[in-house]
Image (cartoon, rainbow, N blue to C red; front, side, top):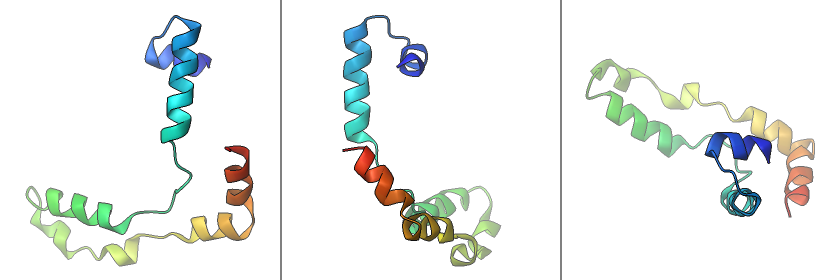
Length: 83
């Protein structure tokens, strides 16, 4: 709560609590890289630096850390905690 209070510059306890509830609803535990998002960024950056189109994003994007977290049960545990 102190982090929210400081970063959102809130003073009233009810505002801090309401912000916390909203953020919990909005937050996601879907941490896998989104290839479509990377492609969008690549397209935008290409306007400034066309060489970026030569980069094969499939060779760069690595979601193995997410698979490891899922297979270890860590993500399931976190999802259960967030309910």
